[in-house]
Image (cartoon, rainbow, N blue to C red):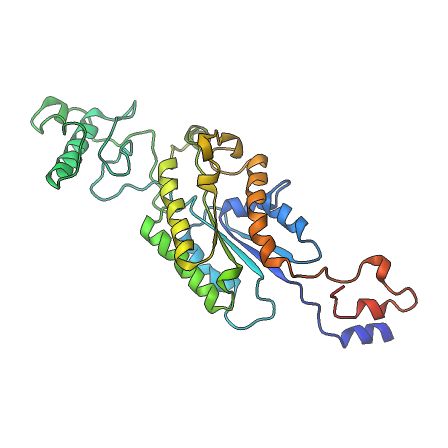
Length: 320
């Protein structure tokens, strides 16, 4: 009883926290061999690593829920490190105003090839309009706009979108909004007492389109992402980190360095494989380590516990 009373008179032992905030790639990170699990193992008895990953979420939703995860105020349990890892869902395809439904166009809309099952009439009509508009504005187009609107090809076929692709407006977030959402979350965390020195932005990994298309088909859907588009979002993430003066891990670039085959890093074309989890952790740990290197091992090593009166060791400040 005396020991319990002595313990109750002591303040609770504060356990530092590392918070992982992201989408499914974060949510799944505590699976066997996951990068989050590896981080938790590395920081055992120093930090609690909290998984706050939400499968399917984008930055629009993340910005809304962040204040529910970390409240403002000088709380003693403010995270010692926070990772923000979004973009894989924000970059889901959504047709832009004035562009054709078939996204075989490159991001600037200048070069295009129809998909194997695209409606010829729809593709020719849309491409003619898009390239004609580009030429009228003085943009470069390497090929002629195509058949005039009066041609038979223009009128041919139903106006159906390319069946290889599936637009995903619910998850899609426009590039500029994605960047602003990331900046907004960084600003909020700073206002909540989490300085920029504790933050790490993680850009989305590259997308293996062939593998992800197969996965989409198994789910009765169609390809809803493109690696080139994911790259634009990764670039925006890196730029936000530079503008905010915080650390960033550019997975999209690192996994494709020297034109290496990155497919082995992905389990289904989008999510990380065991090798991909290992790759992420190996590059993330140096960024996290410098943020937590001064943290002590909590509570004394068992050989150092006083045998006669263990409470003298165990009810101290814990910094042993």
